[in-house]
Length: 318
Image (cartoon, rainbow, N blue to C red):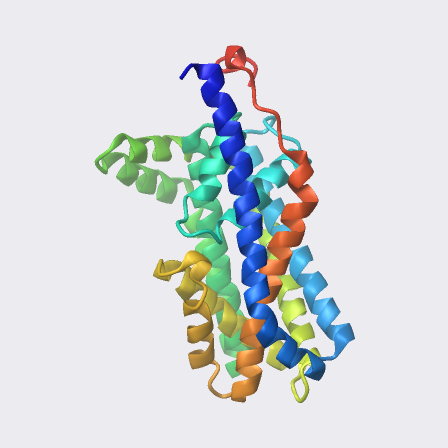
């Protein structure tokens, strides 16, 4: 098979994978519909709509944080719309069994960045996303316990963010990468080097983007609280913190795509002080909202698939 034929087959494979990811996510939504329909009559439609819109906005702000990281490494590679296509298609693919399809699609379709660069950006993004998830959950649960605990979690998280993203810390970490066996770790360490020497204002911009993403997400869960009978906005925010912890456990479990099933089980166990029907209902709504947001944003940016660079430009016009 010559190079032109391989590129043609790979292009159709990418199209097939993106269509499969969309169909799979829609199928997950369809499976959740019976549980969703049983709880819908109890919900306040207006607040539920606010919550769903908030989820979509939060999802887009997550992309803007990813874009800030990507542009640090490849500033002129893709415009906003083309990069949004690569990002949100990969978000859909995270629901497929196996967790490599999204990065595989990005590196194949978005060939203005190498596989090592896509992996490095994804690793940096996931590390920051995970850290912010833990930080936000700690802040919310801290304030629920006492004001002092909430402020302690806020200050501690900010200190860890600033000290962790320090030249000496990152250089030591990347040096460890290069000592691991295999060329992949060496390439990963090299690809992450642009994140070492960054200005403080860039770090603060990334902080603001992630904070905005989580603030809107908290507001959307406050909407869930107001939409559910006998709950308050504060209850919704507290359940959001618990759901975030459950999401993290599910994602790290590696048992199922996106932690589906594990996430809901952990959520039910941790939210034991709330009525069982509330926890079960909001577990479904939390899952459906995330899936619906991925589908909507994936479809919105699906027409903006970037053109692949020509083979003659592989070492030139990148």
